[in-house]
Length: 95
Image (cartoon, rainbow, N blue to C red; front, side, top):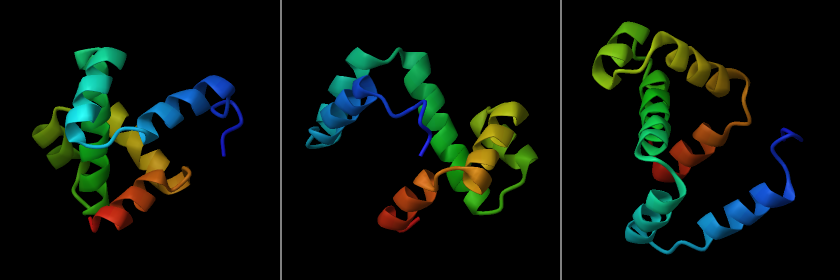
């Protein structure tokens, strides 16, 4: 795990997220926590990751999501060299 990420403040944030009970609570909390652009960027990266897992080309991903090739490359690096967080979630969701 990335030691720069693991801080007491991040632990508190994750505890707060883990306390959310449903999508409505997530919408309410994240609307207060993030700007619309920040939330849209996270959602876009998640969609990019799903498409990369399906072996969709960068060009198709860029066209369908509006993501830049830099964003697509960053997500691809996470899928290849990251902490397997995307894979864990996709497995749990059956994606």
